[in-house]
Amino acid sequence: MSALVKNLLRSFPGAVLGIIGCGLAAGCSTFERRLDYGEVASPAMGREMAYAVYTPPGWTPAERLPLVLFLHGGGDSEDCFDRAGYGPFLDAEVDAGRVPRCVICVPNGEYGFWENWFDGSRRYRDWVLDDLVPHVQKEYRTLTGREHLHVAGISMGGHGTLRFALLEPERFESVAAISAPVMNAEQLVEFADGFWVRLFIPVERIWGPTDDLARVRSEDLYRRWRQTSDLGGLRLMLAHGSGDREGIVRGGAAFHAHLDARGIEHDYAVYDGGHDWVSWRRIVPGVLRFLVAPGEQPAPTSPTGGTRPR
Image (cartoon, rainbow, N blue to C red; front, side, top):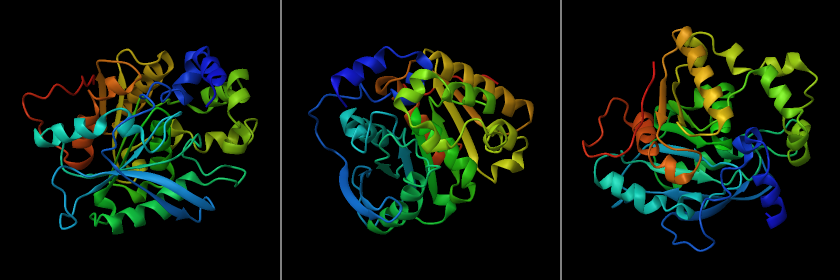
């Protein structure tokens, strides 16, 4: 990404940055690689696609572990964990008993919003679920079956997580959206029709014409998730920072209230921090416990976590 584009992005309204601008300060240009890296031929994308995999300290192929997909945000790629120093951080959390042992796969989703694009030119969701998951399950001998597959994401990846949960809930046991922009159909159309959004995001190629409100409403989380059975058995977690971007805080709180009013069980965490990798350290261990080891209490010295307003 050019310096000019980065400077323009920094000047955008907060709503735009809440969708596409989490990775610009993810880390320096040089970093130590702790994760494994690979590429796999993706029929869905018609080309090789990259991914990274975190395995816990002492892991060997004989150890069968659950698999967590972690969807990065805008401006990041499969190397985001290493750029942000999350390999050693997670090692320490696992060793201290604050994070359960699991394999974490970080796919490269580019600026694709983790969607199968409306115009058919790119199929990011299929790349992850149909091409990458079976490959990683085989290469790392992870446990298979819905009950052992989980997905989490930050910012744009949080959007992708909720879309995965909405469109293919039968694939996962649990999902967690961190710092995700959550909008109803009308809010989404208003946002997508904004000048700055359309200048940098091919809205209609990704999501289709915004003047077809009936179609947009058909995939509105507020309309689709109105009772517990609508989640298809998924366990759901929402999280954002107390100092996160205004639209993300407002949208997360509103969607939590929507779910709560309908008796839809979910976890809602507000951690101390903003929209950045340093702040996300405060919630990621709790997210991984929620996904992989529900009900398991962290070590008492854990500095992580957040409040859960109910």
